[in-house]
Amino acid sequence: MPNSFPVPHTYGNHVLIASPSTVVRQRVLESLRSPVRRFEQASGGAEALGHLESGSWQVLFLDRRLPDLDAEELSLTVRQRYPEIEVVMLDAEETGQAGQVCEEDLSLQSWSGSPTQDAAAQLESGSAILLPDKNVEDETEEERFAASRPAQMMLADPLPGMIGDSAIMQPVYRLARLLAPRNTTVLISGPTGCGKEVFARALHQLSPRAARAFIVVNCAAIPETLLEAELFGYARGAFTGAMQAYGGRIQAAHGGTLFLDEIGEMPLSLQPKLLRFLEQKELQRLGSADIVRVDARIISATNAHLPSLVREQKFREDLYYRLCGFPLEVPPLRERGEDVAQLAAHFIKKYTERHPVPQISLAALQLLGAQAWAGNVRELQNVIERALILVEGGMLIRPEHLMLGDSSYSAVR
Image (tube, rainbow, N blue to C red):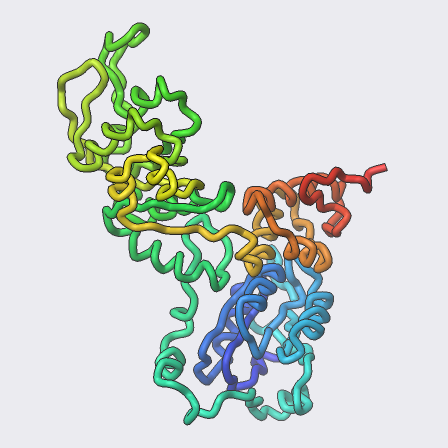
């Protein structure tokens, strides 16, 4: 194998590198001598597909040793769906212990797609491949500024625990990172199963309060008669059965974050007391006259339209505005089609204990991408978990292994 990695020295716009090896990806990046407007890295084929669907790309470096998809099948699909993209197939031979990849074992195997010249010959001769680009004179000032920024700034990284970097999620990620270090109350809205609690946890993990408690209260899961005691606590003897004092979940969040899930389900009778705590940062336990000060950041979430509940007098207007210091809306999965492949790959790894993990066929991925996902990310997670059961120890998930919607699995005989 050659010691040098023969990668063209000049590129135009967007470059995507797909390889499970950080060494391979790093060697390709080091070989990109000229600045590019945007480059991205993917550790697998499903993640690469997600990137391809999220924007325009000119070059895809594709490792033959993908952990989830067959590289040849993926290359064929890319050529069919994105004929304008050049596909560079990379070979990384495993050597040494534990299958570690060494730099000298990297080689450029082939170039496929629709190049205007024989790319392989150009590489062998050492000449640079110039990809079509806009005329500099035609660029706007904003485009020139974007081109001058480091490539890492072009896309916002997903939040901790979040999967997917689709275009629709980019402004949400950026807003969340701006909000994380502050004490601003945040109201997260979105349909059931879209990941509101994951978002709230990410805000906590990125905040200065990360080392303290993250307390969750599901306002819809606790009976109305118990919710006040759970939130605010009670003194010993406050009611029958109160054998000892209880501080409550708000006090347990002191120094950390209190997450009020399904806040639209909070009883009207309890809303004034919550409002007072939000305004004064003070609470009184049931059966006690003592005032307890609590420093907790409040993040709430709802799948309801709170302004409508306010108009129907089912939710206090003053409490709504106090909770909605900054609104964040999490898009439903049907609007995040670019993220389906990455999410599917993530759940396959999550539910697979063996190595190597099963792959998912492109036909199955296309079927997943065509779904409306009424249950959002949670529904996709269930579909993948069922598919791993139905594949019966196989290493490739096909369309017939996907139980979608309310349909039963008719393929089992």
